[in-house]
Length: 223
Image (tube, rainbow, N blue to C red; front, side):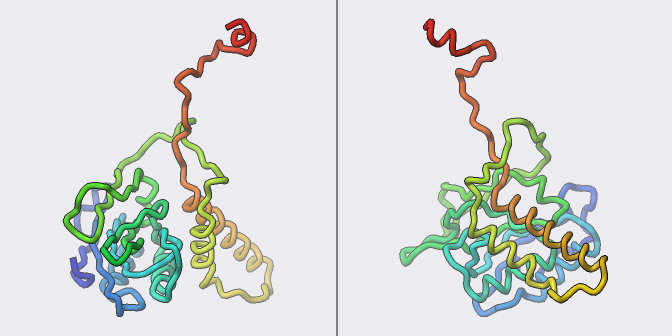
């Protein structure tokens, strides 16, 4: 789908996702195209759920690239200002050619639907293209004891990049009223939590097949 050929909010609003889009951002296109901006603005104003599969043609550690470039920084600012979530996980390359590989394909979702998207994966199946298939599950899951965050596995580079992008437009200045101090504190706090959750996603907790409630050191010694 070309970036100017976008769905509208009048589509089926009774579904979990009101609209899905496939977007390509040209190499020369530093800021996002008008079509993508209009799509994100419609979703924000209409409060409807949106999922975007995007060939960003840009590098950013926020979606797993090894480095950041100008296009990546520009598009990251747009993503945060549009209240979109980046669903990419880890640093698995999405674009592979004989000359090299990179992470340029990203999946974006509005805040209302991002928590219902799970198991984002770069597939090993042959796609007949330089770009690899990206798959994910859409639906609600029950968060149980077997899902947890491990701070030691936090993607620090992604955390820093997402936090920088989230705070880039805050407009720092010396607060003159108490409510401005509270506003700054809330913004920084929310940005820290959001960046941490994205850089350190919930993962399944390994459960030992030999775990039993009645086993104890005494029985181990007797064995």
